[in-house]
Image (cartoon, rainbow, N blue to C red; front, side, top):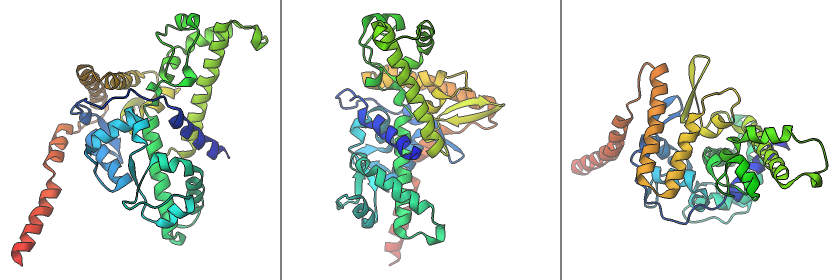
Length: 349
């Protein structure tokens, strides 16, 4: 039951995320491709990571006219649009029949389609996982694969969700906004976490009494505090159940003399990490993207990359050749090798 509620909570976050600005992205993502990500023990550029994830989900390295980096940027920064994109490849029609979804010709489905069958996917995948590997039918394996991808998608979205404005952190009272130093009514998880000491001060100065006896500022501080605690605890519950290794591990931090890589959300809520500067740099990237300010976006990404590279140089003997790998990606040598092999085969005939 705990597993179900943890999973449901993450779906709820995705469902209630406020809509982003209605615009077509015009940001050049060239610098964003250079962000360093740890995946399967290897440091790689975000461009490579994005292509790997999209290939894993959909069997392709691009989505329509979008390259993999553009797809991932949309998923991170505008999830309400991305959830309509049909990227989940489902090969076994028996899975669709079991969860009550009509099969489609291209065999790809959106998060928006699958989320309403999330409990069924979870149940079937759990049962399939309890079987020994040699006892799993193809349908069992398909449920495990689809659930694993579904869960990875949720992790990706939630890795930067602390920057999204959310109704749980709406501050209507002007006195409360002034006290907390907030400029607007709509706020994000990060906005409220930054002001947690001010929330705590009000709570400590409040004597136990009936809720109706509290003034508006104290009522709002109490509501924000409850919501903040609820978010953090439920995220931790979810992570303790489902997260074996974090997706989008682009935020390294020092622990016991070594470099540990995690995603920005986990870094934000970690109790044993003092330096959380990367979280604010990621938020700067998010805000610049939504403002469609190319200069600010490039500056924010460059600052983030410089910070991460500085951390790597302190602890790693070798610095990853990110730009060299980006050049390799552009060359697409595998495509040319297949083309040359095909031509040679035709000539030989």
